[in-house]
Image (cartoon, rainbow, N blue to C red):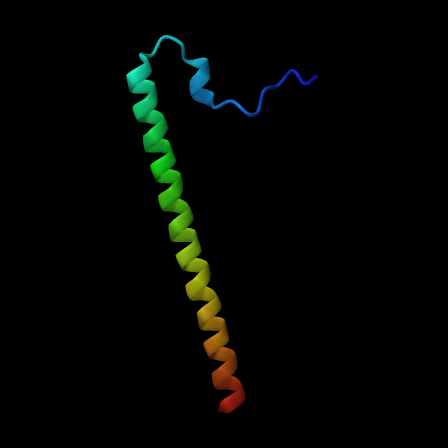
Length: 61
């Protein structure tokens, strides 16, 4: 049995905050994380496309 509970979010350790505010903060955090993941995915896709285009130009040229 592990002592550290990694599955719970850090917001669970703030019992003095009201539940509605807690939910808003949690949803904002999820939105920021989703935006970051989308930006990272778009960047990686564009980087891969650039590498593929460079290889194709190198082979054909």
